[in-house]
Each structure stands twice: as C-alpha cells, then as structure tokens.
Image (cartoon, rainbow, N blue to C red; front, side, top):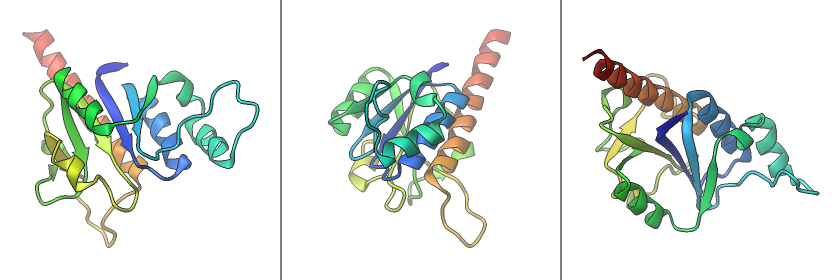
Length: 172
C-alpha cells in the first residue's frame, strides 16, 4: 500500500459510489480513506441489520471496506489542516478555473486526493484549502465522469507518478 497517498471522500451521496471508491482505492494501493460530511460509511462487520445503503456499499466494495483503513471525521477543515501539518499536499479532483490537467500534476511528497459530491463537486470553500486542483479533460458531449471512475483515473496517475519518482531516486 502507498502510505503516501490518502483518498478523501467528502459529501458523496451514493453508497454505490463509496463502495466503488473503496474497491478502486484497494486496487490502486491507497494507504487510507477519510470519509466526511454525509458520505455513507461501511457497516460494522458484526451488524445485525444492513440497510439498503449498507448492502449497496458492501456489494460494490467487494470486501475492500475491510482491507483499506478508513475513518469518518466530523470536521473536514480540521482534518485537512492536520494532513497539511503531516506534510500532505491536498489535491482536489474538480473542474475549476484554477485546475490543471491531472497528467501535469507532479506530487512532491505525500498526497491527499479529495473528491466531492457527484453533482456539485468539491465546495468552493474547501477548494481554497487545497494546494492543487486537477481535472480530467473531457472531450465528448458530457462535462464530467462518475466520481468513482474519475477518482480511479486520478489515483492511478498519481501512484504511477510517485512510483516513477521513486524509481528515479533508486537509480541514482
């Protein structure tokens, strides 16, 4: 697992998307996940009752909710401040006038990739706290991808860039 990469999931409505994000994070080797806002959380393993949302999350995560460390936080602001103190760059995946193509972003250390609401994205107040804003170029008629799909593309790109940097250092 890449301890230097954290996924921050804020105000995602759909348990299906959260489950898909857990599964993608596991596949990409993300070190941990931070959930905040009204994002659904995985059910307890010994839960006697599962809601429809619990079932949807578990079905799409396929067990990744048990393999990727995660926590739910009550204050996103405090969490982002703490991550910055720990040396993480906060990177939002969002279409914005200040965003850059995700392929141009070069991590220089630990990264916390943040994704937001399926419809409204990452709140503008949160974007002000981010070190970088990256976006995927859209070439078709639609102006966005599903949040889990977009996060997967960005996570794999960041991991690839981190690994290339590590290999360069090893070859010196």
